[in-house]
Structure formats: C-alpha cells, structure tokens
Amino acid sequence: MNKIVVHTDAACYYKNPIMGVGFNVEVDGMEIYSHSCNCGEGTVSKGEWAGLIQALFWLRGHQGFTLNGDKVVIYMDSQYVVNTINGIYNSRKESLVPFYRLALKLLNSFPVNTVEVEWIPRELNVRADKLSKEGLMKEINKPAWWTW
Image 1 (cartoon, one colour):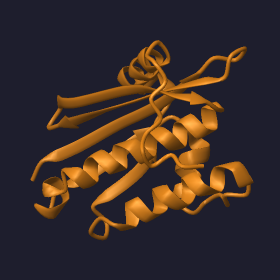
Image 2 (image 1 turned 45 degrees about the horizontal axis):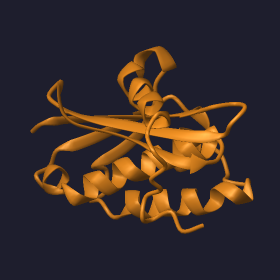
Image 3 (image 1 turned 30 degrees about the horizontal axis):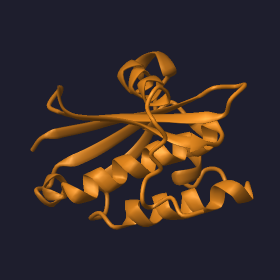
C-alpha cells in the first residue's frame, strides 16, 4: 500500500480579492503532481474550498490509488473547511454552501474511509502555500465546475 498525501491551500490579496489556489500530491513522500491556478475574484474561504475541490477532482481522475486500497490524506490549514467537511461545523454561510456540497459529493464518491481531510498548522503546509501564491500571479482560469 502507498501513502498518498495531498496538501492544498489558497491565497488572496486583501485590496484586490483575487484567489490563488494550489495543491500537490505525494506518494510515499515523493511529489508526483502539483497544480496552481488563479480562480478570479473571491474570498480566501472560497479559495480554500476551491483547493479542496480541485484536489478531489484530480484524485477522482486517478482513482487507481483508492481502488488499490491506498489511503489518501488531504491536509489543509483551514480549520473552517476541515471542520465543516468533517461535520464538526455547519456550513451556514450561504455563499460557501455550493462549495461544501460539491466537496462532500466528491468525497463521498470514493470508497468508504479511503480519503480523509485533516487540519495541519500553516507552517507544515509550505509547498501548497507557495503554489497558491504562484496561482495569484497567473491569468484568471476558473475551473469548469465553478458555475456559481
């Protein structure tokens, strides 16, 4: 069995609310994929959800990992997103509910107990943080799933 680790993060300019999103995928400690993009205008909370969703879409396209019995852990430094997706918090902010629903739907599309989302401190999420900041510098490229 392989150890699959995903780190995801978002960055946002305060004066110009542009969202940068980044995630990377590691198998047994070696990075096999990284992604960064500029999702356009929005809040850092939307960006955190967008990072999780993009990582889940990537994993769904590479389901050989979870179908082989490998366990995937997605690490994020957003306590709000992690606690919401894990059912500890309620998703009450109306503008974030579509993100929550899509993330939950994607998470539930994997075999039971193969993908977990866990919180880590920001200082342990350095690579994804760097990717999200790189995303800020790119041209706006909203993902196809972003329809609201």
